[in-house]
Image (cartoon, rainbow, N blue to C red; front, top):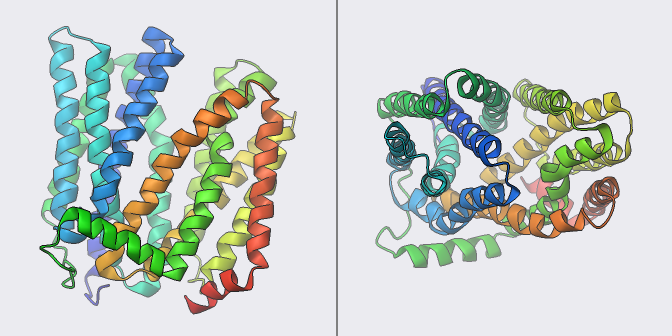
Length: 403
């Protein structure tokens, strides 16, 4: 929490620095994926790339939140960003030397994943350190809007650079943005929370204390369990909808591109809607309503045979997903003690990066045995039902009144 009158300028510079850095990383992620896809056209190679992206993040997230609580968050972010840029620079050197080995790309992706896993909880933990509590929802909305803009711009930038200049220049783009992001952040003074618990406690002990805290904090415990179920159910639509489009509407790159653009525009508008809306006191009621609507929206997406209807559902889905995600994050930040913030946010990130790859190992092969449209519609319907059951759960709804 902050009482500093300069919080607006601080959060502006902080979000700008992280947006620039994220843009570079996202461009490289797309470039590496497309480079491997175009050069090798192998599903196995892409699967390995996905594992290199997720698994290191899962492992490092076990400790990243502890480090965010124990050490200087600003330094962690700067070091992680530099670590990621260094890994990218090493790829550039190998490419300039004529070595285009796939193993180098995988190794660099692992290093980048580790850096991202360390950086993510630290970034999320800094925001409530700078921002007054009554402005958190709005600032989180702005942050999500910026991330949506990055999601919209990065495929386009990555495609243009990769197509016209080549993979080396795509990689260099990340290095340049990292230098800019770290440079801005280095001049930003961020007051660290003074109530760092047991600074000499081991990382393993602090991790255990974080798990114990989440278990004993009723609000956080219930939220983590709620979103564990949501993340499982949303996996098919998150990973398999491009395959659905190909099976139902044909192998048309233009249509796939259009769906990505509409989704990203929806996310941007959703973030703006949160930003310019007055603070909503009952976050529980807000995101339960939102996820009920999301389930219905994705249910229609799964069954429609009209491409225009599909575009509308993706556009609306982008809007509501951002609203729900922002309400979730704000509720968690409001109900977590500052000295435990990093550990709690790290566990949330861990749940996300663990559940998605594990769930897709089940849903992916299952989609080849039953109709994919039925799979997506079925899991989406369950999202609405699950949100509805929580809406009529008195104990769950009481958390919103207390927040």
